[in-house]
Amino acid sequence: MEVVQRLGFTPNWAAQSLRNQRTHTIGFIIPNITNGFFGEIGVAIDAFFRARGYTTLICFTSDSRENEVASLKSLLGKNIDGIILAPICNQGEYIDLVPNLASTPLVLIDNRLSGPPRNYVLQDNEGNSCRLAAHIIGHGHKRIGFVTGPLEESSSRERFAGFRRALDEANIAFDDSLVRSVDWEIRSGYQATMDLLDKKDGTRPTAILYANSQLLLGGYKAIRGNGLAIPTDIAVASFEHPDVIEALSPRPTTLEKVEARIGTASASMLLSLIESKAKTAPSEVLIPSKLIIGESCGCTVKA
Image 1: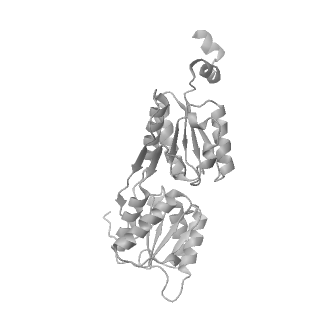
Image 2: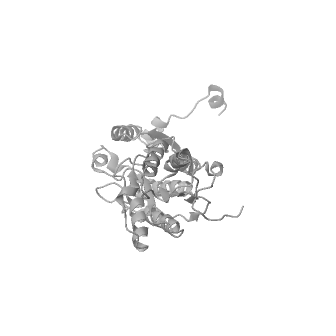
Image 3: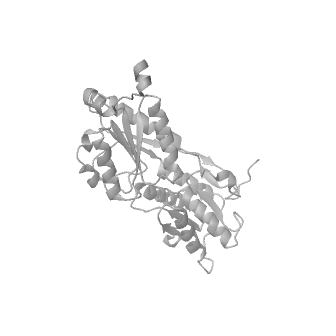
């Protein structure tokens, strides 16, 4: 050990993997590192595996299918023990064509893929969205805008389904003109909200629901840019709980943060797959959220 310390020797993980078929390394593939949602999930995943002697390698796909495939191949080439993937769309056929992926433990988060059953850790998108919309409807709103991500992604589609379900349960007619499907970025939330607020002749929504916190931030900017007050002129609520929530006034009504729970659950599922000696059937975990009441929808919140 004195020689090891004097020479600064570190174990060669590639050589070790040839001997024991394990690198104690896992991969985490996400669309966008600037989205705090994925960042917080990654922190929980890394903490879980670090405590068990593993290293986490992170790849960013920049919402590109080609980058996603390249990231999978790169990680597999490093003989990693397993992968947690946040896919960018719902088409699973291209994933199934990646060589050697079928024999590697894989857990998917955030979106479902078409094709055979897979291992998932997901938010209860439909149930959570329905709960949020029902709260807004409880304030008497009937013309409710809904700003969400691409509807080809299951997370967006399920949140939209929850919104529709809440309208149906309240016997409120659905109005397609109040829905905007964009990407998940702040600028798109701003543009979608500006478009909804441009509606004339009493057709403008009296409330808007946002399917993630990035879209919500863009919505706040657009509403204020139009000289409107929240919630007096328009009520607002968001599917996610933004990190900057304490800086937003009025404080938005949201759903509680689930990032740490998703990260820990997906890491635990992946470790079980890595350590399992027998082939197991794919499993699915849904993470529910409770409402976090703010002032943006008209509720009075005690300080």
